[in-house]
Length: 143
Image (cartoon, rainbow, N blue to C red; front, side, top):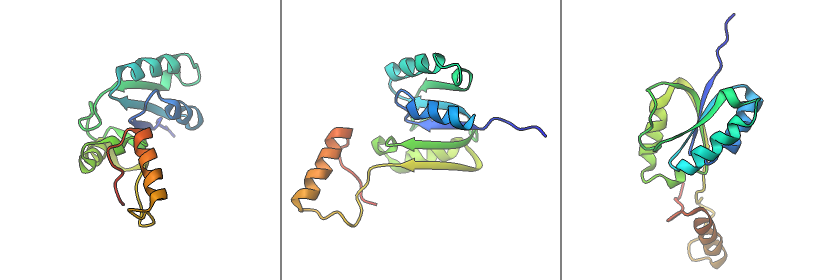
């Protein structure tokens, strides 16, 4: 039987730490996408310096609201504290859906407020503000 190496997309990858680990442990071919050219350059240096992942990992510069990839290109995608920075959440998720093959998996975790958050509670407000300032978020959205 012939097996193909799964193609995975890291949406908003930073310098690609999780990307390299996922590549290393799953043997997938992983592409990271980030707006920041410094992150692309630094991440690619780190990928190339690791012979275990060098041929199966890379970072590219691009906007996750308008990805430079063909439709139905990836077998899986993930985002780690990245799509919370999108100007339009529906738009970014539509774009992720566009580049995924039918039946592909998308995994994500993001900052969000739940029904346990009480507006006006000083402790809740302090924690929320700290997260927003620390992650450069204008406002954490409610689920």
